[in-house]
Image 1 (tube, rainbow, N blue to C red):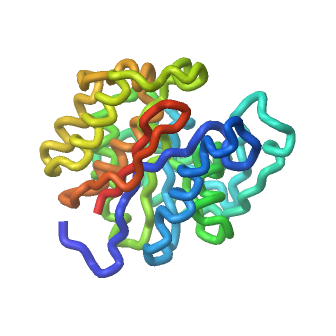
Image 2: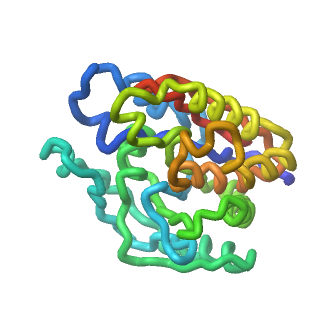
Length: 268
């Protein structure tokens, strides 16, 4: 892939647990390291003209780009303090970009659609309140495909790769470990969780051909079924990695949070 001077990397970032960064937690510093990381994650980059965010909290029968000109917020978390349902993030949408995204995906033979009613779920607005707190960069949410097929999501990323040369930032928003039962009981510090985190980092930082092959077969990785009983919080990584083309991946964050190893990756 030949890049111009403004080519942006793609990212896979953790979005935490519900509105965790904007409420009291016990212990108080549970999410502090992740918050600090997210606040600085893209600070050194040129300002993008828009951000495409693939959240683990939206899946649809086709890859669907949100085309609302002023996307509302979707408070899709439950049992949290009342003030967390009043958080705001008034970023504009980018309907023309949403149409372009659907066109790139369809052009690659993938099922694609636009939705001009969809808002921003918490996998988008919670981390981006930290990443771009002024909400002054347009945001286009993009769904996963409900079939949860890793190879198809890698291909979707490949289709979106040209956006990186058009000053559009591609961000997969999920969690590298997402077994809620183990997280909520503080029992995520297991050999399986560590093995999967090691495998994921080796796969994400492998040569591009090997990276794609390994990620497509993530379900057979050591610890995979423990780390991800369901795929939806890992698949945003596939789109970010697919968009990387021949660019290298690197781990840019690693921390134990609620006893689980959590990692983030940058491509390019």
